[in-house]
Image (cartoon, rainbow, N blue to C red; front, side, top):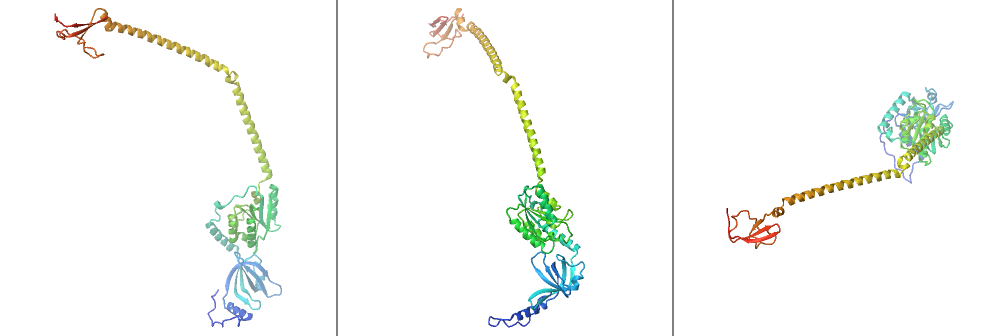
Length: 423
């Protein structure tokens, strides 16, 4: 689009006393918009009206990522001759010039060319958006949450009276009859699909009773499934606090919301199997666990009973006093042996002691003195008590007049040296 028109001579200012009439304001706006250039615009058709006999068709072009719409006018022949035929929900690129309708005070785009956006271009845009969301971490498995095993209430977003709704509800209640559904019916294709799905998603996410949300839709073309690759919807699913299960299309269909959701189901039927367990399977599993517990308990009781029987058969329990009596005899025998050993040791030690005493007696000085010998000590007088005088060993040791003590077997006598005989 060209820039704003060149500045002109400013109009005289208005005031409460001199206001402009509506026609003047409308004329000025129309003149300003009429100077704008032509533009290429992309969006999604939400309304196509081409009445027979009318030369002008009216269309509404909506921004898929925002709640913003723009009216279009185009020749009826262009709209009817478009290939493929234009329909609500189609993604198109149009070329036109902004136009302001003076009488109604509305803005529209006079279109002179309409180009449908091809499947290849749609797929390329989806791939670019896929790369962007993956780089932001919206596909990271670490952020995905596990739905509850037995949800009391399931939120379901799908189109009204659709096969997807029938499959999810029928299969889920057949597997677990106690499950309840809170269903929000919204368009699942077309221009209004994304905003209505986002509103339903927000309402179910705020509901404290809803424990898991299922997005369900049957199969379709790339254009039919395009709302489920919308950036706004992907970010809305990622922002949900409640776990979201995506069940869009068939197994080969992989819209971007499948990668953002916490759980991807191949089909709506698969989603029903993932959100609730099978009551028959759970009952059979419980019966199997009960049988295993019974067998384990029975085996444990038998094992403990056998252990008790083995204990009862042991001799210590059959005759508890027998081992005590045997131990008593052993203790008595050991006591007798100990007494005998101690007595024998004492007797041997007593004999040794008598032998040593006899030897000492035979070898001691008393026995020698008894045979007529004597011990002569020099200078025995005047010594402190307990201090023996030295034994006289040589005749030349004492001098005349020295006092001597002569010890005999039965006592001692004192003598004074008067003379010495060296012969």
